Image 1 (tube, rainbow, N blue to C red):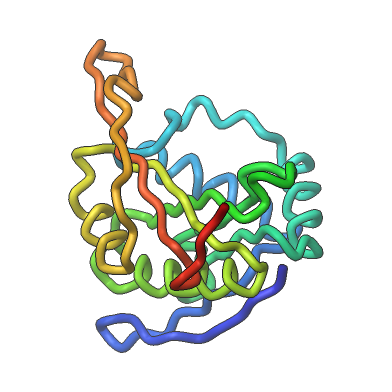
Image 2 (cartoon, one colour):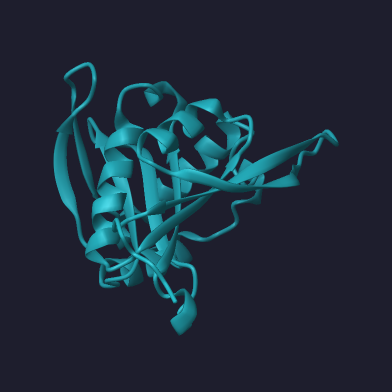
Length: 188
C-alpha cells in the first residue's frame, strides 16, 4: 500500500509521512534498534534485531504493493524518526476483517504530535484496505501510548498478565486493545 502526506508538528516543523520502500531498509532497521533500546515498552531488545538489510528490503518491497498491509515512516529533516504499520491478523476468512497495528517513535520526538499523525494515517489506510477492526497490544504501564490509543477510540478488552519477562527478572502485563473502524459493523 502506498501513502504520502506532509504534516506540521506541534512546533510547526514540517514532517513527511510516507510508506516505506526497499531503499529505506537500513534506516528502518536502525530505527528498530534505536527505539528498542530507548524504552522497555518494545517487544524486543535492540540486540535481538537480527534481520539483514536484504531481508528488510524484500519485506518492504512486498509491502509497497500489498493492498492489505503498510509500513509508514515519518521523516524529519531527512531522518527517519517514527514507524507505524498494520498487517492482517490472518488470511483465513473468519479473521480477514482484523488487522494488527504497531508504532514506534524515537524518544527525542515524543510529544511532538508524530504519534497522533501516524495513528490517524494508519486508521485511514486500514479503512481503505477494508478492515473493520484494528488491534494492538501495549505494555500496561505505558501511559503515554494508552492516552494516545484511547484518544483515537481504542478500547481495552483484556489484559495478559506477565506478558513481558525482562532480563532483570521483572514482568509486565499487556493490555489488549481494539478499534472498530466502521460504526455499526456487526457479525453473526
